Amino acid sequence: MNLPRHEFTLIIQGQCTEECLDLQLKNYKNYNIIYSLWQDSQFNIPESDSVKVIKSPLPKATGHQNFFLQVISTSIALERVQTQFCIKMRADEFIGNLDQVIHNVVLKPDLLHTLNVFFRAFNHYAFHCSDHLIAGKTKNLKKMFVPCYDKIYHSNFDPNVYSVFPEINLTRTYLETRENQSIEGRRELMKQYFNIIDVNSLKPYIISSNKAYRGIKFRDNFDPVRYQSINDLDNY
Image 1 (tube, rainbow, N blue to C red):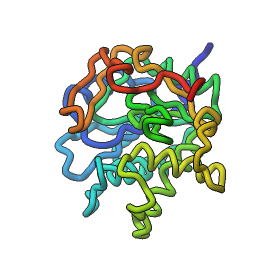
Image 2: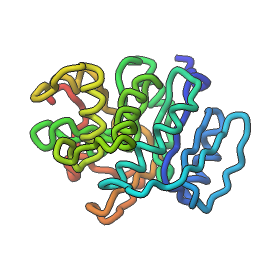
Image 3: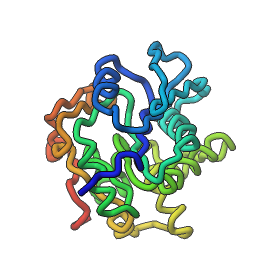
Image 4: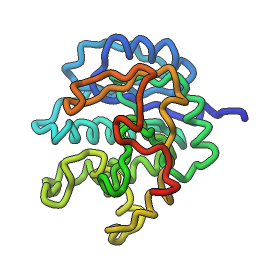
């Protein structure tokens, strides 16, 4: 299959690390890239026809597990994307085999494709996708992130309605936007709108974790069973 890299834009958002930035710039030369960083970033990334850099002011509130930061940096970058497809990634992570991600998107272009990293079973945490990488049609990523962005800036992000988990906030927002009706208990929607990619098919990789996992860096060694993550949605 001839993989259409030129039809994809990489949104690399958040806080860079020197190691991952070096790997990204060396390995993603054939992609359109938008770095969406913060004004306090110490990294000066050289721009070119294919690499663009946005540095935004930090918001006053970051949200639980930096949810607001993820939403704002991703939404700002999405407005600059000019390709049909995009892949949202974290700036402190690296995925070596993006061709496998593109292959999944080309096969099922109407789904959002995420990793199995912390993708939870419905009975564990309902509507909890993985947000370490999200790939698909640009218009679909906008349906996930932009409504959250609008709620943040209109002071309408009710903590009594939305979960403390960013992944659940994103999943619920996306499904509610697509369905335009209640999604409560409708676990079948996850298979209808999402696909899970095994991170171990994307080696080499570096995946970061939050304080709940002591900030562990997974280097080609993520164990979905140990970390209560599911690999597919067939029996979701």
